[in-house]
Image (cartoon, rainbow, N blue to C red; front, top):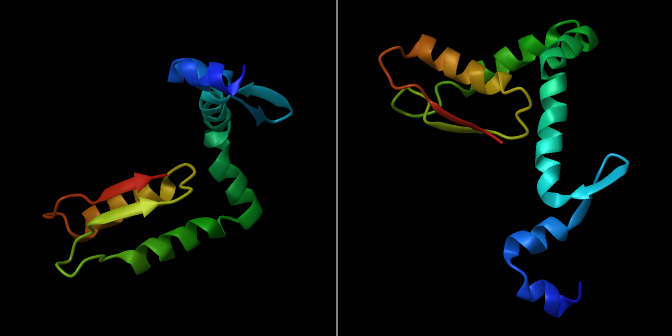
Length: 115
């Protein structure tokens, strides 16, 4: 559609007309998020197994060391807010919560966003 026609369409109609790449196909932009989510869901269970095989389980030790270096995160002795960027399966975020609860059982659990 022309720019004027696209501008006159409701935002949802204009968005659904936009295309992007997903693998070797072209898909609607608003469909891509669901497709990526499905792919991730299909591989998530095997993700840590693959890392175990490639690193000889060393990746688990690295993650534990990383989380131990983070805690405590705040001056008053408990984890505050964390953002796990490109968090994958969220295993580092889960480790932060578990380790913080173990170290500071009387404190509120930390707030961790996985993005």
